[in-house]
Amino acid sequence: FADREPDWSCEPGSECVTTADVCALQPGTWRWDGGSAVSTVAEWGLVCGEKYKVGLVQALFFGGCMIGAGIFGHLSDSKLGRKGSLTVVCILNAVFGLLTSLSPNYLTYVLLRLLTGFSTGGVGLCAFVLATEPVGPSKRGIAGMSTFYFFSSGIALLSGIAYLFQTWRSLYIASSVPSILFVFLILPLISESPRWYLIRGQTDKAMSIMRAIAATNGKCIPENVYVARDEEAKDYDQESFEARSKEVVTGSVVDAIKSSLTRIRLILVVGINFTCSVVYYGLSLNVVNLETNLYVSVLVNAVAEMPAFFLTAVLIDRFGRKPLGVGTQWFSGIFCLAGSLMGNEGAWKVVRMLCGVLGIFGMAGTYNLLFIYAMELFPTVVRNAALGCATQAAQLGAILAPFVVVMGGGIPFLVFGVCGIVGGLLTFYLPETLNKPLYDTMDGMAVGENEA
Image (tube, rainbow, N blue to C red):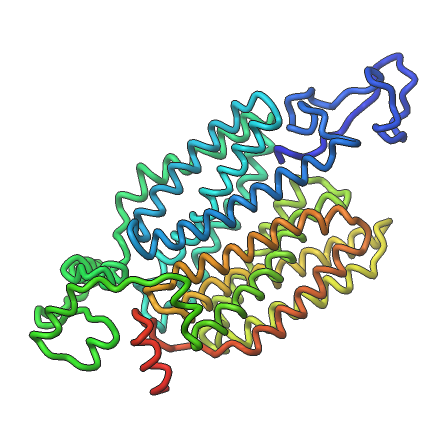
């Protein structure tokens, strides 16, 4: 919304023609509807030869997301933890968002969007793992999918906020407020992941949180029950357990690459996230090529995702992660390929928009399913680092998506369709994780997978 190209009209008494290309008009013969403050494009003249700067802003934002996902993915596995990392990125998000509203020029704006992307890259990653890691296998799928309703609701709400706050500076201020409220009102009520405490050797804190969760659910954990890492639980001895439970187990993406078990998984997850992201963000950005009302298009796309979340949540624990991942990507890919064959005039414009909505419907289910799937494919000690790599691949896809969109015509739909089909093929090579436990360490995962 902030970087949109607003409508324009001719100045009274000028020889300007509204059907002409704005780049061919003489300066002073036309004006932006609503004034120059409605968007960055209007304020800094990012049209004609400067139009590439709009795509550059979007690309650098996603580039910042890619960097932030890698850094905060590692920090949330190591020093800061899930909650600590989430606190940091939310504070940074609010600060950078507010500073963006004060940007005096384009270069400052670009820098602040890059920094905002850096903090944004860690938000979804840390929040999702923190919300789903304590949940058992039987409820993890539906619990994970339910978190994404908030994401789509936020996008739908943003279209309304953007409609109310018509200037880009006021929009950045308004959209920064939720991060501030979350830090002060919600985060104090959230506990750190007990699994993170467990691999950091802080078993007392892990057990305390587990007892609090049980009490909230009206249950009671017996005093003689303890939490233990995978390999400790299989070979229990009181004395050795007390000594080993205090040990800090660390890991990084390097460990995931070294292990043959997780290396192939990581490569496949990275590839699938890349293709999925090109489609998901590309279809979201492609609304500018549909020549429909921007606010309505964004709202429709956001609402179209919600039924996908519901269906995925219902089916994920019945059919498994793998079949659902293949099916949703191919569903999206087929409709995108169909959209590439449609014209952009008359009734065909509506049909193409419908193909785009159905494409987002399918890929929204995939995109969010991948978070659950990828989380279950890696042990706690490298989980966020691996998810960080997957998120980085997704952000790389998001960086390239705007450049696909500007090709115009049916080409974007064709590219999105091919990506959807390829992503589905890659998913075939991942193992099923339905009803399997979350492993804590690399050794524990190796033993557990071998036994399975």
